[in-house]
Image 1 (spheres, rainbow, N blue to C red):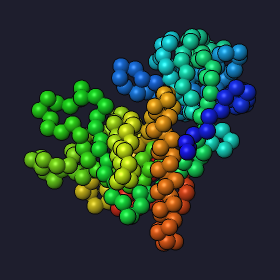
Image 2 (spheres, rainbow, N blue to C red; image 1 turned 135 degrees about the horizontal axis):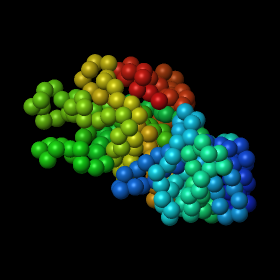
Image 3 (cartoon, rainbow, N blue to C red; image 1 turned 180 degrees about the vertical axis):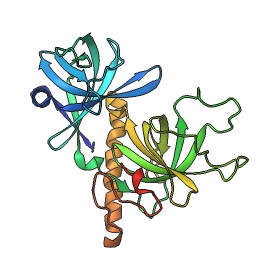
Image 4 (cartoon, rainbow, N blue to C red; image 1 turned 135 degrees about the vertical axis):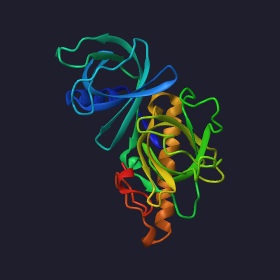
Amino acid sequence: MSEIVMLEGHESQSVLQTVTGERAPAIMSYLSKDKWHVAKVLMRELSGDRLYVEGCHSSGKPHPVNIRVEQPVGLNFKHAYGKFVFDTTVVALEPSPDPEAGGTIVLAVPDRIGVVQRRSYFRVNVPESLKVKVVLWHRTSQRKSKQSAHEYFEGGLMDISAGGAQLTLPLKASETDPTGVGEAEFRKGQFVGVRFTPMPYEMPLMFSAQIRNVLPTADRTGLCLGLQIVGLEASDEGREVLSRLAAVVDRYYQINQSAGPHREVHRSPTGPNPSHIPAGALQ
């Protein structure tokens, strides 16, 4: 059964009317030149078949969004019992009523909106009985030298949610070490591709993510990356991945619970803190 509930007609319109009335914040994602971008916006007005949103920096200050008419976009926002996701298209760009604001983006009102329960966005540890490998790669090869021998990097998945993940990668022991990564290989804000197989008998999951934190592990033998998953709300295929991720979160949680009270995972937005992972790596 799908982990995403779809709202249509009056139900979806009612949700949009409520969040625009509250000028609720949302996250907009879009592809430009094969690269994902994310921007914070305010849901400002719903009028007929048009949804008006306004660019806004995470600090709350106006922030212009580099986007064009007919650009497909995805939006997600928190409301009531879950996170709401949908894809749509930019139909116009207008100046904001407030001259100091970041500009108004006019979107086509979506036919339907998906809802993912909030519990899917709480981090859960990968069960101790599983050793889940993660393959990571740079979304573009432009910043990698032609002499580079590695396009893909392998690490271990530590925790996962429908909105993010935490993983570790081994560091190179020396410049001539053919395995591991260099300390400067990944940086905060960079977009990467991610692939992992949740259970041995399942098909792999693949998605794009933005690096939010890069910290050394406590023993200094690896890098700990905190990732924010991006772009899944922007297409039907992405929402299928999102649905699978939500199911994985629930399955891992159930496995951790069945392992006994001493291994129980507490559902919190940051998740547990493994002893060998720096506390600052958690989001």
